[in-house]
Image (tube, rainbow, N blue to C red; front, top):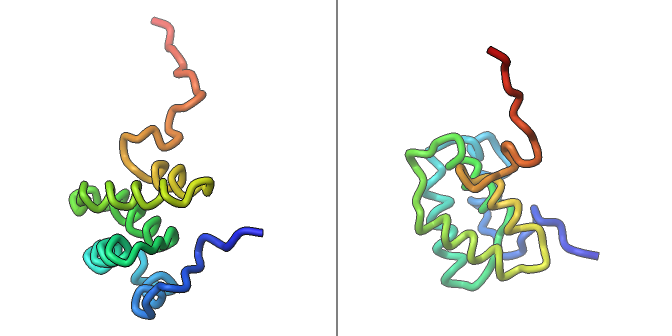
Amino acid sequence: MGVAFDKCDTRPAHIDAILNGLDRYNPETTTVFQDYVVQQCEERTFDCYANLALLKLYQFNPHLLQPETVTNILAKALTVFPSPAFSLCLALLPGAGGGQGRGRKRARGRR
């Protein structure tokens, strides 16, 4: 049986507090999550739940998006294969095909 994706033994208490509170949706926490991604890279850990929270913040605040951070998240997600982490991360990225328009045909109007 697998481990729940929202659990991470190495997650710092301040990140856990953000994820379990309303600050999870506060754009001001973006830098905290970005620093946490750097920490994950340095310590060779992976926190899918926290990374998805950051990607969700990017989705609603595209002006805050940091391409290097997104690249690091996707690279980290690939290392936990075969989990759905990479697909989940990719689905939250703008322009990555995140399910929008896939398998749907556009209706054509008659003139």
